[in-house]
Length: 322
Ligand code: F6P
Image (cartoon, rainbow, N blue to C red; front, top):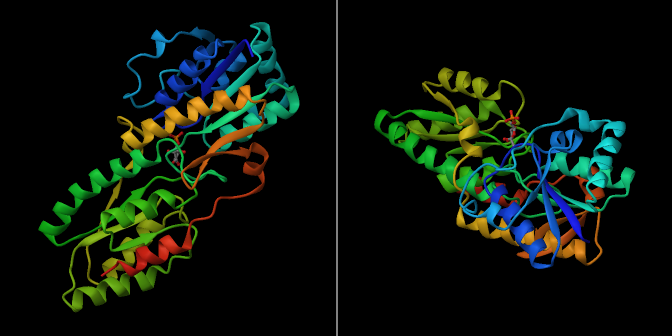
């Protein structure tokens, strides 16, 4: 390859910047010219594509968000638009594309490769950690820690006022973020979409704990991907059992901030590996992590399989409740 491009797509995740830097510096090391595409697939469609230099990616390893900007681009769902996007790359002599993003963005990357023949490598970047074929995604560790930081503070008030707080965390339709945050925060309960939530049982159990003097305050972590209105239904049930729970929705705070050390290293390694896999002739694959090793995952698998929550982890979480 003489010339490649990189873009970030979908929800931003802390660590996207070090991933871009990893791609750019590894490519330059191998004598390959690198272009940065602005605003994900939108920039690809509009030809908003510019050369990146080594200096251009200086001083970004520690920054949250993505300096290339990101977007959710519904137009890219159309095959004709994807064909136009490929011609924007070809016009500039760009021979391959590296996409940093979540499930939807990498599915788009797979279709793009299949239809246009332009080699594509994906890098998993999302706070949700819901991508099939990889144990970890860029941004997940930072988001877990950001949520913990907030919950540790909420717990001070929960303790002082002997209240329960229902804390809703992100994660789209999966409970990865919720389970990790819940275990690390010492949550009294965790509600995730992967397992049926018995609202009545939750409130009864908390009422029993209160009666037994096991505590009248605590944190219940609820994944946003649960059935609509679940958080409020739990709150109402708890009120019937003598609690006055508060609801706190953490929201986009979980997407921002400096990437953690873990995410910086992960992003740098995956960025570098993405370029190396391209040079080794791979395409239509994602660089993932399996038991601490970087592995190649066919992008097609992302469209066919859904990553499952580890039931062992949830079991442990439940055992650690009061
Ligand atoms: O995929 C990351 C994520 O933050 C999800 O956890 C959340 O459901 C979604 O993006 C929110 O997206 P947006 O910021 O586009 O509303």
